[in-house]
Structure formats: C-alpha cells, structure tokens
Length: 304
Image 1 (tube, one colour):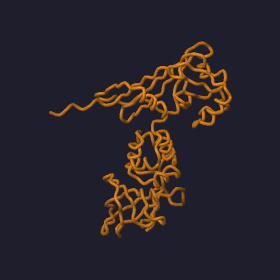
Image 2 (cartoon, one colour):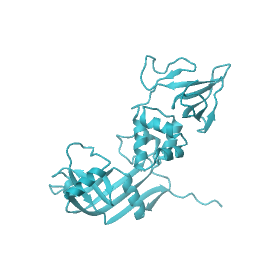
Image 3 (cartoon, helix red, strand yellow):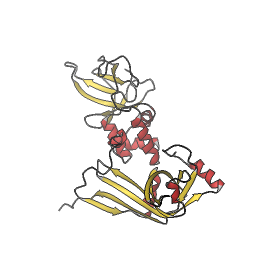
Image 4 (tube, helix red, strand yellow):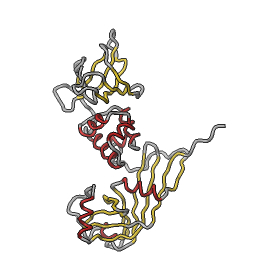
C-alpha cells in the first residue's frame, strides 16, 4: 500500500464492501508512502496514527485530469478519484497568504491545525482539495473562515449576514490597533480629489516604521492625500460568525521624495499595487490618532 498526502483512507466491511469509515491522510512516516499514516477521520475530526488492515484501501486524489470519467474509478488500493473542487490550487494560495499575513510559520500553523508541516507545504504548493474537517481546522488556526479559504463570497458585499443575537462592541487599544493595521494589505484612504470632491479609494499599503505607505501615480486621487490630514481605514468582516473589526488612522500625508527613502521603501515593500501599471509615487501617512472597534458575542450569563 502506497499513499500521498491528501489521499483518502477508506475502511470497508469485508463482507458487504460498505464503507465503515474514511479519512484524509495528513501525515506520512515513510518517504515511499507506505504505512503507517496520520489520518483525520471524517466522522470525528480526530487525528490518529493508522496501520491499515486488509479491509482498508487508499483513494488517490489525482492532481491532473486523466481518462477516468469524473467520479469513477476502480475499487482497490489504487482507486483514483478526480478532483471536483473549483479553482484547484486557490485554497492553498489563500492559506499561504493568510499564514504570511499573520506572521506564522508553517510549523506553528500546522501545530494549531493538527496537521503535519509536510502536509501544509503540500496544500500550499500543489493543487489540492482538503477535507472539510481539515479546512475548518486551518480556518481556526488562521483566525478566518473556511468559506474565505475557499474564496466564497468574493463578489458579495460584506455585511449581508445576520447580526449576532447579543453583540458587544469593544474599543481597541493602541497596541491592538497597530497590530491589526500591520496585518492587512488593502485599506481605504479618504481624500479630497483633484476636482474638489470628497473621495474614498482603496490602496495596497504597507506599514513601515509606524507609517502607512502606499504607491500611486502623480495626479491620481490617492496622490491628492499628500499635503493634507487624511483618514485611513482598514477592516475585516467574518460573515460566517457575524463578527468583525475596524481600525481608523488619522494623520498628515506627505509625498516621499528623498531618493534613499524611496529606494528603502521599494526594497521593503511586500505587495504590488493591484491596479498595475507604473506607480512610483510613494505617499506616507504618519498617524497621530488611532482608534478601533471590534464586534464580538456578548459573554454568556453566569450560571447560578
């Protein structure tokens, strides 16, 4: 018996062939893929070390399309199951992005999600379709939702879900505001546009030496922030849990013109402007005021 990370271990009844249990192989102990395996069982979400018996076989999840019709295969040790996940590879890309955004190593993320670092590397680097249990475990480890990792709701405006039954609105302290501000890559800057009208525009930004910096083009709406006191906002909404937070930074904006400072910002930048094109004008916002709010469920009433 040989398996790969992401394959499914199926245990059947020897007499009837009915599936008694199945799980996702999330850890290998031998490079050649021979047993034992770390398996996350689909019925309990438990992870156990498994030495498969004669009633078990491996379903291989192929990474490329073959001549096998979707949903079919030969029952046995080498059963092939075609992947039906939309956008294969996107899940791993989102997992990797969320992990880097939160400054977590693969080892720490894997420990939180109770999977092996090797399996996490496989998910991030190969087209993959993790089980629902593994997806929820990763979402919990990364403080996000399984729907977000799958890319659900990309085209839906946030905030259309149901409100919490007993929400609590908390003020965030300065340290938490700075931490949350540093985890994001897209925020909104409120400016007076060149035509004199107020505007709010999204920008890809970085936090460098406590300053919010972004790249734009001369004469653009974001470039109009320079020379004024502006407001900059970033937020996160968890639709599934009806929770979220927002941080507002207010301070003077300036254009970075000193050549050494411009080169340093270009060197330290981790993101590219999504709008594309040549954007070599750097704008820096030095917050003089930071405020934030977080919506969470209210504490349950104490039992008597």
